[in-house]
Length: 275
Image (cartoon, rainbow, N blue to C red; front, side):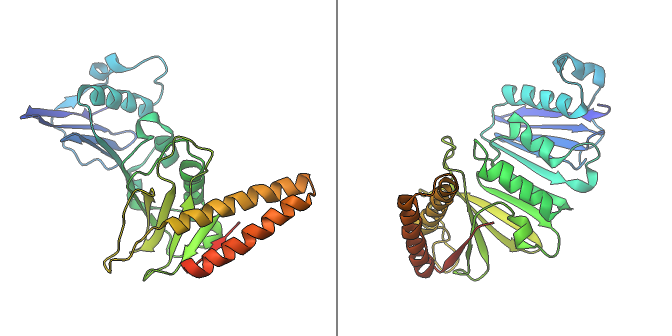
Protein backbone atom coordinates (compact mmCIF):
# COMPACT_ATOMS: atom_id res chain seq x y z
CA UNK A 1 0.00 0.00 0.00
CA UNK A 2 2.44 2.64 -1.19
CA UNK A 3 1.86 6.35 -0.83
CA UNK A 4 -1.15 6.03 1.43
CA UNK A 5 -2.28 9.51 2.35
CA UNK A 6 -3.65 10.66 5.67
CA UNK A 7 -4.53 14.13 6.90
CA UNK A 8 -6.07 14.68 10.33
CA UNK A 9 -7.31 17.98 11.67
CA UNK A 10 -9.18 17.94 15.00
CA UNK A 11 -10.83 21.21 15.99
CA UNK A 12 -14.08 22.11 17.78
CA UNK A 13 -15.41 18.55 17.61
CA UNK A 14 -15.05 18.45 13.84
CA UNK A 15 -12.40 16.48 12.04
CA UNK A 16 -11.28 15.37 8.62
CA UNK A 17 -9.22 12.38 7.67
CA UNK A 18 -8.14 11.30 4.22
CA UNK A 19 -6.51 8.01 3.25
CA UNK A 20 -5.58 6.80 -0.19
CA UNK A 21 -4.18 3.54 -1.47
CA UNK A 22 -2.61 3.87 -4.90
CA UNK A 23 -2.82 0.18 -5.72
CA UNK A 24 -6.59 -0.24 -5.39
CA UNK A 25 -7.41 3.40 -6.11
CA UNK A 26 -9.56 3.73 -2.98
CA UNK A 27 -9.77 7.00 -1.07
CA UNK A 28 -11.37 7.48 2.34
CA UNK A 29 -12.51 10.78 3.80
CA UNK A 30 -14.02 11.35 7.24
CA UNK A 31 -15.58 14.67 8.20
CA UNK A 32 -18.20 15.86 10.67
CA UNK A 33 -19.32 12.42 11.85
CA UNK A 34 -19.55 11.05 8.31
CA UNK A 35 -17.41 8.68 6.28
CA UNK A 36 -17.12 9.21 2.54
CA UNK A 37 -15.25 6.57 0.60
CA UNK A 38 -14.51 6.37 -3.07
CA UNK A 39 -12.21 4.99 -5.71
CA UNK A 40 -10.89 8.22 -7.13
CA UNK A 41 -7.42 9.36 -5.98
CA UNK A 42 -8.24 13.01 -5.26
CA UNK A 43 -5.95 13.73 -2.35
CA UNK A 44 -2.50 15.29 -2.54
CA UNK A 45 0.86 13.73 -1.80
CA UNK A 46 1.05 15.67 1.47
CA UNK A 47 1.30 13.80 4.79
CA UNK A 48 2.09 10.33 3.45
CA UNK A 49 1.96 7.28 5.67
CA UNK A 50 4.28 4.51 4.52
CA UNK A 51 3.52 0.81 4.39
CA UNK A 52 5.81 0.31 7.38
CA UNK A 53 3.91 2.89 9.44
CA UNK A 54 0.53 1.36 8.61
CA UNK A 55 1.62 -2.25 9.11
CA UNK A 56 1.10 -2.02 12.88
CA UNK A 57 -2.66 -2.03 12.19
CA UNK A 58 -2.60 -5.07 9.94
CA UNK A 59 -3.20 -8.65 10.98
CA UNK A 60 -2.01 -11.96 9.48
CA UNK A 61 -5.24 -12.29 7.45
CA UNK A 62 -4.84 -8.89 5.81
CA UNK A 63 -3.25 -10.30 2.68
CA UNK A 64 -4.59 -7.90 0.03
CA UNK A 65 -4.36 -4.15 -0.33
CA UNK A 66 -8.14 -3.87 0.06
CA UNK A 67 -8.12 -5.81 3.34
CA UNK A 68 -5.27 -3.69 4.62
CA UNK A 69 -7.05 -0.48 3.72
CA UNK A 70 -10.26 -1.67 5.39
CA UNK A 71 -8.31 -2.47 8.55
CA UNK A 72 -7.09 1.14 8.54
CA UNK A 73 -10.67 2.34 8.03
CA UNK A 74 -11.95 0.20 10.91
CA UNK A 75 -9.28 1.67 13.15
CA UNK A 76 -10.12 5.24 12.15
CA UNK A 77 -13.87 4.73 12.60
CA UNK A 78 -13.19 3.40 16.10
CA UNK A 79 -11.26 6.60 16.85
CA UNK A 80 -13.77 8.92 15.16
CA UNK A 81 -17.23 7.30 15.56
CA UNK A 82 -19.41 8.23 12.59
CA UNK A 83 -23.18 8.43 12.19
CA UNK A 84 -23.11 8.07 8.42
CA UNK A 85 -21.05 6.12 5.94
CA UNK A 86 -21.08 6.25 2.16
CA UNK A 87 -19.06 4.73 -0.65
CA UNK A 88 -18.77 6.33 -4.08
CA UNK A 89 -17.25 4.26 -6.85
CA UNK A 90 -15.13 5.82 -9.60
CA UNK A 91 -14.75 2.75 -11.79
CA UNK A 92 -12.20 4.29 -14.12
CA UNK A 93 -9.76 4.28 -11.19
CA UNK A 94 -10.61 0.81 -9.87
CA UNK A 95 -7.59 -1.34 -10.68
CA UNK A 96 -7.81 -4.28 -8.29
CA UNK A 97 -11.05 -3.64 -6.36
CA UNK A 98 -14.54 -4.73 -7.43
CA UNK A 99 -17.90 -3.34 -6.31
CA UNK A 100 -18.96 -6.74 -4.98
CA UNK A 101 -15.80 -6.93 -2.84
CA UNK A 102 -16.65 -3.62 -1.21
CA UNK A 103 -20.33 -4.45 -0.64
CA UNK A 104 -19.41 -7.77 0.98
CA UNK A 105 -17.23 -6.06 3.59
CA UNK A 106 -18.88 -5.62 7.06
CA UNK A 107 -17.88 -1.94 7.18
CA UNK A 108 -20.25 -1.18 4.30
CA UNK A 109 -23.15 -3.40 5.35
CA UNK A 110 -25.19 -0.38 6.45
CA UNK A 111 -24.13 2.37 4.10
CA UNK A 112 -26.36 5.42 4.08
CA UNK A 113 -25.56 5.97 0.42
CA UNK A 114 -23.66 4.31 -2.37
CA UNK A 115 -23.05 5.45 -5.89
CA UNK A 116 -21.09 4.93 -9.06
CA UNK A 117 -19.91 8.35 -10.17
CA UNK A 118 -17.63 7.46 -13.06
CA UNK A 119 -17.69 4.31 -15.07
CA UNK A 120 -20.61 2.08 -15.99
CA UNK A 121 -22.19 -1.02 -14.52
CA UNK A 122 -23.66 -3.60 -16.87
CA UNK A 123 -27.27 -4.69 -16.57
CA UNK A 124 -26.17 -8.20 -15.57
CA UNK A 125 -23.92 -6.83 -12.81
CA UNK A 126 -26.76 -4.65 -11.54
CA UNK A 127 -29.09 -7.65 -11.45
CA UNK A 128 -26.62 -9.46 -9.17
CA UNK A 129 -26.36 -6.41 -6.90
CA UNK A 130 -30.17 -6.08 -6.63
CA UNK A 131 -30.66 -9.78 -5.91
CA UNK A 132 -27.80 -10.33 -3.45
CA UNK A 133 -27.58 -6.95 -1.76
CA UNK A 134 -31.22 -5.96 -1.69
CA UNK A 135 -33.77 -8.77 -2.05
CA UNK A 136 -31.82 -11.46 -0.17
CA UNK A 137 -29.68 -9.29 2.09
CA UNK A 138 -29.87 -9.78 5.85
CA UNK A 139 -29.50 -6.03 6.44
CA UNK A 140 -30.64 -2.81 4.77
CA UNK A 141 -27.78 -2.19 2.36
CA UNK A 142 -29.24 1.00 0.89
CA UNK A 143 -30.62 3.18 3.65
CA UNK A 144 -31.00 6.27 1.53
CA UNK A 145 -29.84 6.23 -2.05
CA UNK A 146 -27.77 4.39 -4.64
CA UNK A 147 -27.09 6.08 -8.00
CA UNK A 148 -25.47 4.04 -10.75
CA UNK A 149 -24.48 5.06 -14.26
CA UNK A 150 -25.83 2.33 -16.49
CA UNK A 151 -25.73 1.28 -20.11
CA UNK A 152 -27.80 3.51 -22.39
CA UNK A 153 -30.48 0.86 -22.86
CA UNK A 154 -31.62 -1.24 -19.92
CA UNK A 155 -33.41 -4.51 -20.80
CA UNK A 156 -35.93 -4.87 -17.98
CA UNK A 157 -36.09 -8.65 -18.20
CA UNK A 158 -32.31 -8.86 -17.77
CA UNK A 159 -32.15 -6.24 -15.01
CA UNK A 160 -34.85 -7.97 -12.95
CA UNK A 161 -34.09 -11.55 -13.94
CA UNK A 162 -35.29 -13.84 -11.14
CA UNK A 163 -36.77 -10.93 -9.16
CA UNK A 164 -40.47 -10.12 -8.76
CA UNK A 165 -41.09 -6.44 -9.47
CA UNK A 166 -43.94 -3.97 -9.49
CA UNK A 167 -44.07 -1.70 -12.56
CA UNK A 168 -45.82 1.63 -12.09
CA UNK A 169 -46.64 4.56 -14.37
CA UNK A 170 -48.54 6.44 -11.67
CA UNK A 171 -45.88 9.14 -11.49
CA UNK A 172 -44.61 11.16 -14.43
CA UNK A 173 -41.91 8.57 -15.22
CA UNK A 174 -41.69 4.74 -15.22
CA UNK A 175 -40.84 3.37 -11.79
CA UNK A 176 -40.15 -0.06 -10.32
CA UNK A 177 -40.65 -1.42 -6.81
CA UNK A 178 -38.84 -4.41 -5.31
CA UNK A 179 -39.53 -5.96 -1.92
CA UNK A 180 -37.03 -7.39 0.54
CA UNK A 181 -37.47 -11.06 1.33
CA UNK A 182 -39.88 -11.20 4.27
CA UNK A 183 -37.83 -13.94 5.96
CA UNK A 184 -35.05 -11.40 6.66
CA UNK A 185 -36.14 -10.32 10.13
CA UNK A 186 -33.55 -7.56 10.52
CA UNK A 187 -34.81 -5.58 7.56
CA UNK A 188 -36.52 -2.27 8.35
CA UNK A 189 -36.79 -0.85 4.85
CA UNK A 190 -39.00 -3.22 2.91
CA UNK A 191 -39.29 -1.53 -0.48
CA UNK A 192 -36.69 -0.29 -2.92
CA UNK A 193 -37.94 2.34 -5.35
CA UNK A 194 -36.11 2.40 -8.70
CA UNK A 195 -36.23 4.73 -11.67
CA UNK A 196 -33.95 5.70 -14.56
CA UNK A 197 -33.01 9.35 -14.96
CA UNK A 198 -30.13 11.24 -16.59
CA UNK A 199 -28.50 7.96 -17.67
CA UNK A 200 -28.41 6.80 -14.05
CA UNK A 201 -30.34 4.06 -12.34
CA UNK A 202 -31.52 5.66 -9.08
CA UNK A 203 -32.56 3.55 -6.11
CA UNK A 204 -34.03 4.63 -2.79
CA UNK A 205 -35.10 2.41 0.11
CA UNK A 206 -38.45 2.92 1.86
CA UNK A 207 -40.32 1.74 4.94
CA UNK A 208 -44.04 2.26 5.72
CA UNK A 209 -43.05 4.87 8.33
CA UNK A 210 -41.47 7.10 5.66
CA UNK A 211 -43.50 9.80 3.95
CA UNK A 212 -42.24 10.54 0.44
CA UNK A 213 -43.97 12.96 -1.91
CA UNK A 214 -43.11 14.18 -5.39
CA UNK A 215 -43.13 17.82 -6.48
CA UNK A 216 -46.89 17.57 -7.06
CA UNK A 217 -47.55 16.35 -3.52
CA UNK A 218 -48.29 12.76 -4.52
CA UNK A 219 -47.04 9.88 -2.40
CA UNK A 220 -44.11 8.17 -4.13
CA UNK A 221 -44.34 4.92 -2.16
CA UNK A 222 -47.59 3.67 -0.66
CA UNK A 223 -48.75 0.79 1.47
CA UNK A 224 -50.67 -0.63 -1.49
CA UNK A 225 -47.43 -1.38 -3.37
CA UNK A 226 -46.01 -3.20 -0.36
CA UNK A 227 -49.24 -5.18 0.14
CA UNK A 228 -49.27 -6.23 -3.51
CA UNK A 229 -45.65 -7.41 -3.44
CA UNK A 230 -46.30 -9.36 -0.23
CA UNK A 231 -49.27 -11.08 -1.86
CA UNK A 232 -47.16 -11.85 -4.94
CA UNK A 233 -44.49 -13.42 -2.73
CA UNK A 234 -47.14 -15.48 -0.94
CA UNK A 235 -48.57 -16.62 -4.28
CA UNK A 236 -45.11 -17.74 -5.43
CA UNK A 237 -44.69 -19.77 -2.25
CA UNK A 238 -48.07 -21.43 -2.80
CA UNK A 239 -47.17 -22.29 -6.41
CA UNK A 240 -44.03 -24.03 -5.19
CA UNK A 241 -46.10 -26.00 -2.67
CA UNK A 242 -48.52 -26.94 -5.42
CA UNK A 243 -45.69 -28.49 -7.44
CA UNK A 244 -45.00 -30.81 -4.51
CA UNK A 245 -48.60 -31.37 -3.48
CA UNK A 246 -51.53 -31.14 -5.93
CA UNK A 247 -53.96 -29.86 -3.31
CA UNK A 248 -57.32 -28.20 -4.08
CA UNK A 249 -57.08 -25.92 -1.04
CA UNK A 250 -53.77 -24.53 -2.30
CA UNK A 251 -55.31 -23.97 -5.74
CA UNK A 252 -58.17 -22.08 -4.11
CA UNK A 253 -55.77 -19.82 -2.20
CA UNK A 254 -53.86 -19.09 -5.43
CA UNK A 255 -57.10 -18.17 -7.25
CA UNK A 256 -58.09 -15.84 -4.40
CA UNK A 257 -54.69 -14.14 -4.52
CA UNK A 258 -54.96 -13.83 -8.32
CA UNK A 259 -58.26 -11.98 -7.91
CA UNK A 260 -56.94 -9.81 -5.10
CA UNK A 261 -53.79 -8.85 -7.02
CA UNK A 262 -55.82 -8.01 -10.13
CA UNK A 263 -57.96 -5.68 -8.03
CA UNK A 264 -54.88 -4.07 -6.46
CA UNK A 265 -53.26 -3.59 -9.88
CA UNK A 266 -56.32 -1.74 -11.20
CA UNK A 267 -56.73 0.38 -8.07
CA UNK A 268 -53.02 1.14 -7.69
CA UNK A 269 -52.28 1.69 -11.41
CA UNK A 270 -49.42 -0.79 -11.52
CA UNK A 271 -48.62 -4.31 -12.67
CA UNK A 272 -46.82 -7.20 -10.97
CA UNK A 273 -44.17 -8.86 -13.13
CA UNK A 274 -42.67 -12.20 -12.07
CA UNK A 275 -39.54 -13.55 -13.73
